[in-house]
View 1 (cartoon, protein in one colour):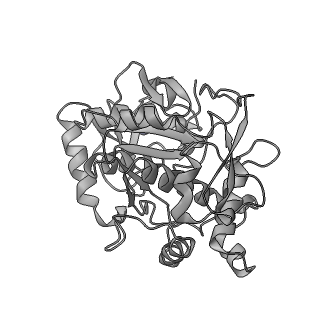
View 2 (cartoon, protein in one colour):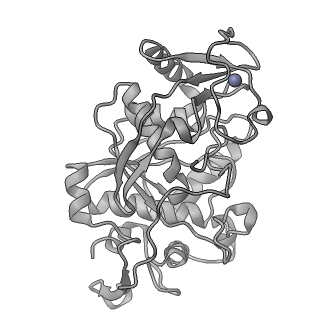
Amino acid sequence: MGICVDETLGRQVGARREQTVRIPKRAVDRRERVVGTKERDHVSLIIDPLLRPDLARLASAVGTSPLTRFAPSPTGYLHLGHVVNAIYVWGLARALGGRVLLRIEDHDRIRCRPDYERALFEDLAWLGFEPDTGLDPPLRQSETPQVYEDALDRLRESTLVYACDCSRKDIGGERYDGRCRRRRLEPGSGRGIRVQFENGDEAFDDALLGRQMQTPAEQCGDLLARDRDGHYTYQFAVTVDDFRQDVTLVIRGADLVSSTGRQIMLARMLGRRNAPVFMHHPLIHDGLGEKLSKSAGDAGVRELRSAGLTPPKVIGIAAARVGLLNPGESIRAVDVARLFQT
Ligand SMILES: [Zn+2]
């Protein structure tokens, strides 16, 4: 059994003890190269196949002018983990001649707050990461419930979509066994909506991690599309949005690898012919191998700002934390494509 990323909270890993996602060991062959033309721009790149995708191969996989997205949830302030993601998103988009869409993933209306959203726009602008689309007006998931409703209707034509009143406690953090499939519950308050997954494997080529194989129906069972509070889930909303917004390159942290097979399968069930290309990048970890989040002490962009650091310094710190730059180096947001043009 693979890890099951919690469908409601999306970014929390539910079960930690087992892990079927194969992430190759760090390459031993690390070479360094200095790039930049002016002295102050010099940065030395560590060439590591697990840090940077093969740009030529990625370019041929995504085609001309790919669209990728930066899709934060306004449930807190931006921290270095977000900056790492922004470096990859903007860096690769620019290196590939593509565009960046900004999407506010505020599907969870209990945890998302307008002041976090304002701070997010402000910090992103301060850092210098400019989206090509989705900023004005902002693209918010909470404003398009009909889109998700329509997607559920489309699924109903070809698969079982059913109400489920099981609580997280009922399911116990394990795979959902489909116990409500035949109960024919009426949808309503206190009831979620699930989509039956077909059996079978879902294979995909991750641009950094290589070939991956997942079995969505066995990983988590039937997909929770809307939770018992009436919120569309992370898994469902992003898949619908990546499809309708024509996102062709998904760049995100390695903690979401296990969601990918499910999202590819769901996209196909929704009628998407060509799945986006996925790339899962390294995360900032603490010494114990756990992903760092703001609550675990990862530095917030606001704190670093008020400590007097410049945007290139903050971006440099984030890049160094995953090994894209050497500690102490700085880089401007407009230059991050250089980190990938090896
Ligand atoms: Zn149920």
